[in-house]
Length: 336
Image 1: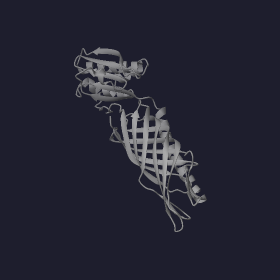
Image 2: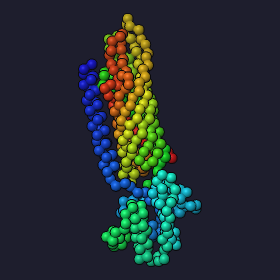
Image 3: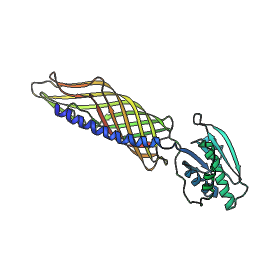
Image 4: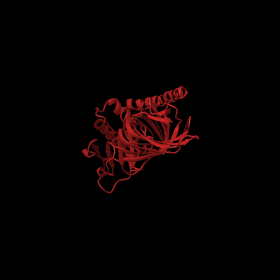
């Protein structure tokens, strides 16, 4: 029993170190300047679009380009600013973060489509976006730096519209001191994105393996089922390819022990139920696109009450106290 607890303590320390590393990554992203999302509707080959994209990227914006919609572009509101570029003008709307509605509209008329006119128009629009969106006054130094910047053939940072629903499927490894071996579950985690920073995550896990606990009188295969939810705070890189999460939640635990008795003992199957509050940290990396990601997550929790496995009235293993650790690897897909 003491050896099991020592191994369990080592596992808990290892999981804590993993969570610490992920937490540092999340904190670093949190301390970075907030990202601003700009959607530009216009022809991909339009010279104003080609100049405007790097101007806005240089201001720290995440830029997405799309073809001109047939309807009002504010009907497809995504991000912080919508910019529409036509042959005659550049119009942009500033979106309310709460309602998602456009509440500011301004138009810059394109009087001159010469190279110099295109440059001046893109500078003027980017400075207006900077003043409106970043809530700072355009500075002479910034204007000169922008005006004197050479045209760049930079491409837009392609960021899909914010996902509302996603799901992760993977393997969850449960680690607990007290004499039980690591167990693996198949995990499914639907996620509802309440905003760019907050998401509600459900957790469903069904056993893939049932490790054995051996003691005097026989052995028992332990299967563990989980069902719960968590609220996570999310940070991400400028191109949305890397995401980190930090959150807390609670799960219901169903532990089933199927006993195989030695001669002179009777076999039995017993279920135990517990609640498990937990904290979690995770990260994911886009696989060529932000909509498909490879993720990893760590959890630390405690079972209330502690689950106890007994043979012939004697305790042979415990699960859930002082801590339960879990590590998962998932494939995450934005569904909608």
